[in-house]
Length: 450
Image (tube, rainbow, N blue to C red; front, side, top):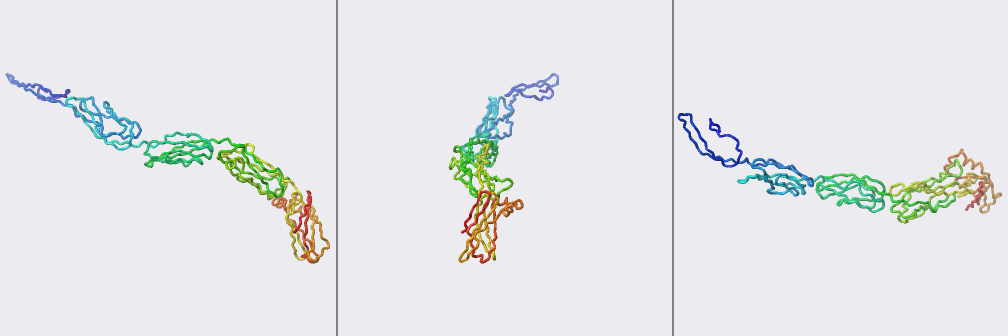
């Protein structure tokens, strides 16, 4: 207390009601005094929760938020007066609100604090709006996925968390034969390709939020059986078919084996070619499932080649489950085409004025012919002085197949069209062709006209 002014000042340190006496003296002589009894009540400061808001939380993510208070008489006791957030609780001594929230939503939470005073005990409360958001959408399955084997049934489940269920799955880059269940996220099926694949998988939640994760998945190639060409004859005739080709495997296989059969020709005579026999390739159908040891049916290869030489049938490329499984020495067989005497396929007689023309069509594998013999007969009452004519044809065939006419050599192989003209004294319409014979180094062939 200020002795000159009578002001009572200071900071109370004790709570309660205090009683004290106050005396005052004047400055007179004699000095006079007066006194009085007084009481004063000292209360604690008001109890207040300091925080005005609470940070939001996410489902499944650990949450911890300390609360503080001022005023009143410490220590404080904390509690949740009303409302609740699933998964969260408050520590009564520290005021820490903590826990992993389990349910998304917006909550009204009334928090209360009480001080240590006994008479009266003080308390304060504050209502907070508290938001729990869904956790971030995440695919929890790790890459790489479980490996498998091509041609063998496969199943792998994927899982996700966060977001707002239900989830929807998609994986457009899966290998052939596999698919993903859009509801369960299970990849299943029988893979039709071998190798390691990178597959992007997408999951979407109920709020159309999406996340994508790249997965690696490996499918092993089943051991491939040995592959052979069978049923191919060792020799074949000119202008004929190579037939009876079979592709066989040593044992049944879990998938399709595909490839190409190749047919090529090498003539015996160097420097010539036979365009009537074209090297070709054809797709090979599956050789494993319907008949596990051979092609569904023998293949016939059309061949109109007329030169002697060697036909090679090979299997230069074989694929199983999209993997090249061609043996280090690809299967192949050879067919020998032997030479022969000339072959006449047609002989036609035509009349022009006093001449008759005989057009002979055929092939001579030696690409030469030295002699032609024509036999005629008379029709009706006509008579012939000579019924057979021999013609030396060496120069004609040399011209046809010679280097000066190389296009015939390559375009036609040993095919020829040979025309012989005869002049007729008399009625040419009374002449009939009976036969034509043609000779090359291998022998003579006779063609009978009809």
